[in-house]
Amino acid sequence: MKKQRFLGPTLALALLAISACELDPALLAGDGLNGPSPRPSGAAPGSPVPSGATPRPVNASPLPPGVSPEPTTDVPSSPGASDAPVAPVETPVASAPPGVVVGTPPPVVPFVPVVATIDTNLPVTTEGMRDPVGATPAEKLLDLVNQARALAQLAPVALDPALSTASAHHVNYLLSNTTAPWHTEESSRSGYTKDGALAAKNCLITYRDPVGAGLGIFGGVFNRGGLLSSTLTHIGFADGTRADATVRVVAMRNTNEAQTAVAFPASGQLGVPIQYNGEESYLLPKGAGNVGFPATLVLPTGPFSQITGQLFDAAGAEVPTYLLSDELGARRGLDPTGVAAVLAKKPLTPGTTYRVKFTAQQGASDKATGWEWSFTTVKPLSVDAANTTTMRAAVGRLSAVTGMVISGGLTTGTSGSIFLAFTKNFPSHTAFIKKDVWAATGLGDAALLKGKKVTLRVVPELIAGSGNIQMVITAVDQITVGE
Image (cartoon, rainbow, N blue to C red; front, side, top):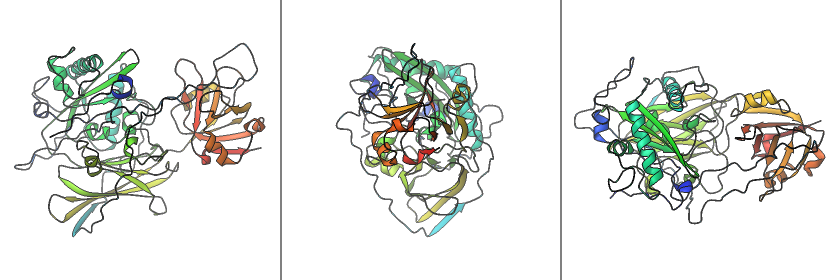
């Protein structure tokens, strides 16, 4: 019997998470919300389903109940009349609730395939991804999705107003029913609609901005399975807020064709982020810290087992990684996603070409299939830490931020991070460093860095509503101090 996952007692902690989606046969066949499902103009149909085969659902994986999104850790001081530097005040950070199990992924089961076919001729692109454009959030999401699909050599998808309406109905249902299962709607509950119930069966649910920094919704792992499915033709989008809760729903429509293998980052892709920005960190070992941007493979119509994944640097040396796959997910009671991923145990090196290799055993035979491709990480921008214009332009982008320290010390918040301020007046440009990371640098009293030049390798973040910019440092190698 399939496990049902219920929303926790607090909507802000449990509802706002990505969850597993089950494809509805009516949606697959295209006779659900808006009649037949023709492909958008220019889209090429995939291979027909083999006789007797059923297309494998491509889903997304849920956060366990009670897991909260990671909030902003430090908030710089607000503008004031005084020119004197003021120690920033931290906002208390809500820790994950007790009882959340975070274990170590089981080791990959080694096997020697009798027949192994490695595809080294995947289509190659030499482009990166730009900021999405559009007049509405739905149009921006569509632009981002089609950028990723173009890089992966997939046909574009179209925005369906009926799917967006259905998404809005399901958003309202979720906000009205904090303990309801995410991917069904019960007719007896407030907010139930027929099209919302249909959309619930084939959708992605996320608490994050789907077009935000780090490639937005593509910064994680399991969302890619749905949005980079070769069978996807249409999407709809809606979001809603009630009290302290915001939920976003992306409804999808697919054909009943066979799924093909899809790699992301795509083969030859440039400008790939170096760090993970997703919602599946609960599947990683406790204390894993910051890990590399995931390389994923949406598996073709299977079934597949004994999945292995490897990552190699530019010199050909294997990079230590974590593997996420359906075999791991099944041990945690999660529904299948059809996605395998490798994540380097540390953030990737900027401006470096990496090679990815996956193998999997197909069906009950001893035949194994493999996929192999390469991508290149982003080169950091050079940014003046004191220049508001260049700092604003660097928000959400990997940057080498260099500037003279105006003041440094200990924040007044609950965790007591170290801060380094690069501006005297509003808006503030401030770096925050965890105390253990700062201790490992051996730099001593942060106040003694006043007047020193410091370079930070970081992704600047804009504090909403304040105009201030923060830079969160989580590793020793992100800080370089020079005269």
